[in-house]
Amino acid sequence: MFDPLSRYANMQPYPVTDARGRQVMVVPPPPPPDAPLMGIHLLRQGERTDLLAMKYNGDPAGYWRIAEQNDAMLPEALAEKPAINIPVKQP
Image 1 (cartoon, rainbow, N blue to C red):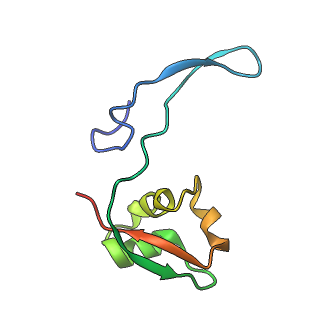
Image 2: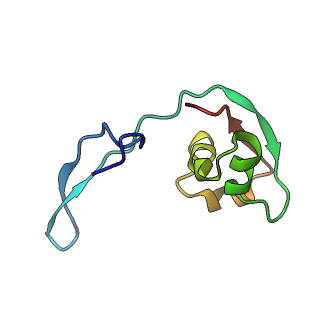
């Protein structure tokens, strides 16, 4: 179901009943990151997490690591923060 390198690869889906009474399979969120902190970045207006991920870790697709390190479900939630934690790139 997920790429073997995905953080969801080892998570076991389970059934949940939605608001309409249908059974749907959901995947639990992975445990919080245990990545060491590279540092803190002071956000400027218009900075995006994919560009910060490229700048600090060389991987724009790693934007989710920055969001997760800062307890944000969506990267857009970080736009209002004055500073965000930048995790060290994980293999």
